[in-house]
Image (cartoon, rainbow, N blue to C red; front, side):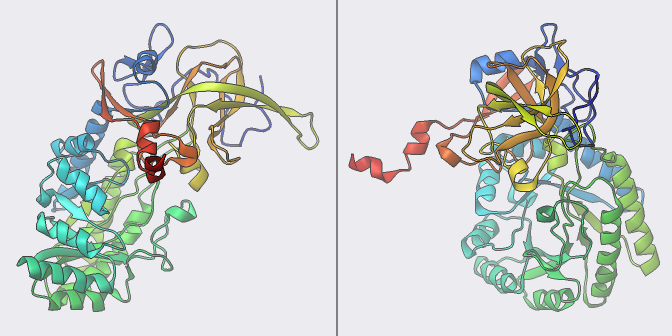
Length: 467
């Protein structure tokens, strides 16, 4: 059998359309004797029977293990050059009280970007000393709440925030630790919307203007400057960008030492994961070792001590731990003209979710994989496009993959690597209720975020009270 000419170049025709590609799926993903995909020892069939679809499923043991592995890996790598590391979990990837507790148990601190994320962290019992707050437009109320709850570090994003944080710290009678977010000028090789180190963007300040802002921070007796913060982008597959960014930041770091202590350097996150079999992210141990080497060499060149290092992984922890289950509602074979060849056929598979539970394909053109979850099939694979139920032509969950050609109404399909930025970006477009999140571990499943109902949606409509 030959590949469908409509398939993108990166998509290979699979030998077995039932196979689960290692690295794309959570570490516990298998098929049972009946052909059901199992996660954390729980079959897709039993999950669907109990909780319905669409359904976010998080492999708890996998997420916890990835968090611990990343922490230990970076501690080892940077310990080899004589310094220590703090790992913050980037809550924007996926945050609920249970996940916050998992990260705390794994020895990670928690990075939050809004008052809402801070509220979740506090509700989970996360100590303020284990929380960092960043964001480009933190309100007076958000800053005050963070300070009142003993948040360890606030990342200052602009000149305005210096005085804003200083006023709140003065009122509280404390000295607040702060970092300054800077743009290193290193652009991650990724989608334009994800490359957050460009000069012409909303985050941070330039390397050129940073010394002036640091001097202003140091003028406030209720602020203490602890270091620079940078984030070069997301879904980054190697260490080159991190290494170059670290070198540029350390040049600035060294110059700032002339006027006072700079004990820390936050290199951010953005470590990539595999969404398809074609993705080849470097192993996190390789990235950690190469980042540490770059930092060590730069500090040696500059003749300065190696600072304490902070990093902020999110997707790399929860992304592969997540799978979303859907039920097929319709299928449709579409004949497509191919210049110079006979027409080719694409099979559209429409499911009971869509861009309301995974906005990333519509927002970023993100590619995902899909597998038949409720059975296996020996029928030859067909090129499919998995579509959602929303009233948008761009409501596509999987642009291109192969499924057994007998995929039919009522089948359950699973899209892996949906642990990050799916729940976080979920919305109610077309008045579709957001799915539940279920954690699986050791053969048991439990709801960690309740799914919405139509009653939940209608409860906010005050016009109903008038009927």
